[in-house]
Image (cartoon, rainbow, N blue to C red; front, side, top):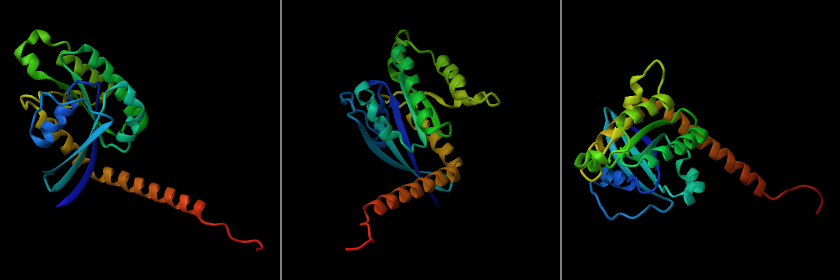
Length: 217
């Protein structure tokens, strides 16, 4: 089997349920009393798609404004960005856009981006609590992520999930992982370029540290 390592970063406003989403997928558990992430946390999961073993490195980042300045450290070289919002909070949906701008600014248009609306269990119990219609998410994705020639891609990148009820969580990562496998060759090329760049940078540092020779004693 072929191997693929891929880095995923989960972004969004504080308290939208990013940590619960990631833990539900990686560990199959839900803790209603989970605390806010400080900086970022890291979890990994290995899955098999067709003939490829995919090792997902999932970075769950803090959503508080005071951590925004260090977020770049965590989503640098990411292959996929998952933007999360709370479907019961219009404010969290609007705040999501700034994360998309940052991803595109720092990683370009080659990154896979999916949008995840959380806390579907609340709306399932009381539909009046919904503040963000799913259709709005699709329209947003069509405007900012879609291709004019492939309008179906907008719906393909939008999800609504419940970490509490384990609704839709597995499906999000199934779709993303399959896209990563389809881009396997491209991802490997980018990874190798990164390794080469890091090696060149290290060689430059060693050259600067090397004692100067020459001249008289």
